[in-house]
Image 1 (tube, rainbow, N blue to C red):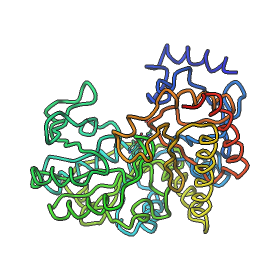
Image 2: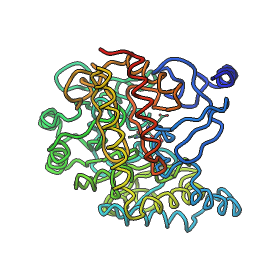
Image 3: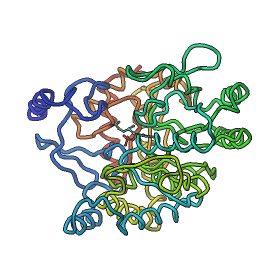
Length: 430
Ligand code: KE4
């Protein structure tokens, strides 16, 4: 079933560290050999061995309109005929920035970059430049890309001075990142009582998608907004994953909270390399060349990424898109939960429009990183492979959310639930 993928992986390991260009793709989170994809269309991936999968990874979020959507491909072909990169302004950059501003009311200006990491890193620098403060606050289990200040976890000690999560991150830099528990607003208040006048920003995933899918408890985001405003710190919403996925106005529209800076990526490039940081002009005009906070990029605003993102945002802007996506996500979540329970398996399914997370646990809910970490990882690994061999491609990690697209049909959802019913029985009850 996976013969060619295995031989391709052997070859890849000769030339690429771990055989992949991003660690999660290596299947270390689930074991086994990663499958090599040959092509994709709609909700489906086809691997090099000819196996077809219903895809719930969607390139980790960008493919909300489905793979190879005709509108996106047509826009790309038209731009390709004109050239791929000029290193000079193009009207499509203005068009995408204007579209983002039109869709997210709190945003007046947008700076395009080439990845979510670059966008989050730049947003942190902007916040530090504006406030002239050095400390930042992040949350255990949230991921904002691999910039040094963000590869930090809670240290020991009462106020969680950060320690690096990776070699190569300077300890002195990590100390400037304070890490607290997601959904614990009292911990945020405590950190601000101690360091408030030194904190440049709080960066948060308004819906956490990097400890699998964890939703904000009522009052958490509102509390962040109030505390940061009171202390003159900036609130950064990292919407790289949630941007234009969970609501037409992103998570900030879903929860009606306006951050100071928004970090975007994935969907706004429709699968091409992109990131962006955005916000009111009073903040964004501090960025070079208008302001003194430096940020730059050779391929920032690349025309191919811009037209791909524009075509994707046009597709999700169609009336009813999010209602249908939310309904299909709920249908999938409910069906998976029912199938697990019928097989005697304790499961929690967190979900919101377009994204969901499965947790093998007897706990009634999963709302923070410590609860995610206590869930059954090995059982998830067995479930992943039981689904893969039945033609369903889940995220190859118990700590990653799953993504539904506008291309997934009711029949795809029904097939997924039927495969899960068999898979749950295969892995056995608790
Ligand atoms: P990139 O640098 O990978 O484009 O974006 C980093 C990033 C920033 N913020 C959030 C909320 C993100 O989810 C990400 C990247 N997401 C992961 C998946 N959880 C990308 C997959 C990968 O690392 O290969």
